[in-house]
Length: 169
Image (tube, rainbow, N blue to C red; front, side, top):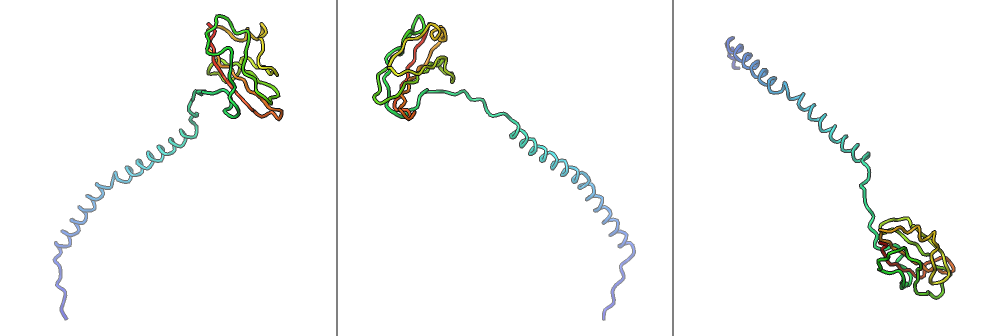
């Protein structure tokens, strides 16, 4: 058997000194590592939470409705007669359209162009009507209007529809 050779005492001290230096060097490297990792985690967590809160609490986007048609496209197209595409000095006195066979009634609505609530609504059984002075007063000057006529069957279904525009100076 061989016998172990004793290591000189100064080698032990050199090795311990060397280990202490390595430990100090590693402590210097990692001294700020942990706080930086924690800080990065906190920043990322706050960003994610902030994005979720913004997404949940932000109001829906504001949209302006663009209408190309004020009436249902189902049923037969109704030819509107008057007023149609005209620029008038005064509110119209009469609305007229072609007659639809089999209808129970017509629903006529007048809208300021772009609005969703009619300024005038009337149900009639004939294919034209005269406006009263009160109805004419609801159609002020300086605006463009869309008017619609819907023919309704006995069961309330739409069997025809039409629309036109006019402007009052």
